[in-house]
Length: 102
Length: 102
Length: 102
Length: 102
Image (cartoon, rainbow over all chains, first blue to last red; front, side, top):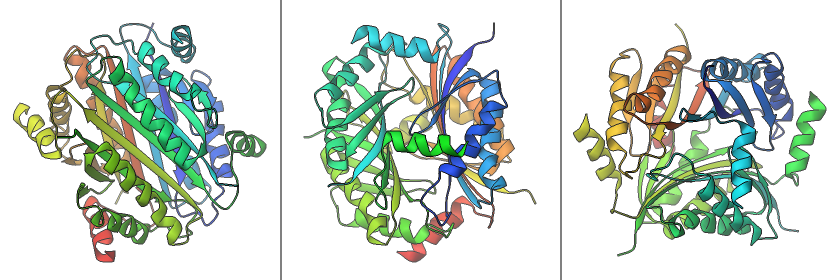
């Protein structure tokens, strides 16, 4: 089985006139629905993804385009990838490991 | 009422011999329990915080020390602050705004 | 002597109507000139700082306010701190160590 | 001409027993030498890249593998992309715009 990674992504349009960005974030989020192989979790600060590195990079590439399709002229995208190859980690196993130690 | 911000923080020790960091993350997470004025949510990639900027910076300062207290010699801390002053945003209101638009 | 850390900071106003942010970045950057104890380096993506952790956090707190003083209603600030306590690292020593190994 | 973006990347191995990571960073940095179409600048906290989005993503994919090739079991990679499509920005033009306003 191919190794899966956990990643976090934030896609933000800059210079949008309104400080409210939720309509852009909703469009970015809809992209994840078209990639059923990648697990996705929306948080108040980001979207967290779980899947193979190649699937996730392809998904993020598409999420990054979403604000441009809605008219934005500048997009800032931040990605954080946690790739562990000694064990098979998941979003759930990471949370579980921390909770057990608390 | 003082303005609250939403922040995200990741505190990671470097050069720890083991790839498993959950014991360190648990110690970092325990610090949030000592700051009841700041709301806290653990995600698989970070801790998200809601409170006044000064409370949150004091809390993060303490979270950053936790791995050193456990023996780490190098700590990498990342912080992302979302500070909106035209409306009073919360973790819940941010999620809500995105969900309504989806 | 107190330990110094290397930090990186990006302060971005959201919802500014113009995609050009350089006037805001210039204002953020001017704050570093008022903190002569902290070394500062402007890069095309961030400002890198070297100083004690307390000096740097006080400086970043002030940088984060700068766009609000210019009229912004929402500011996104990202900070990355590299705190090494086994040796005294500097911006220059970090670059030097990588170059020697290349 | 295809649009170019400015990106910043940090590739860090976790659980390496030594707090010194410069040998890993040097290996990551060498990857940029094999992509002459992408401009690259090493800073004390990151590598900054300028090129088309597709070239940069392919390069970062390869940089992310470098620590695994050297024996690391866990790698944390952070990417920040600044993609502006109303004008053609470069590392140099971004710095210049800020300096003019200071």
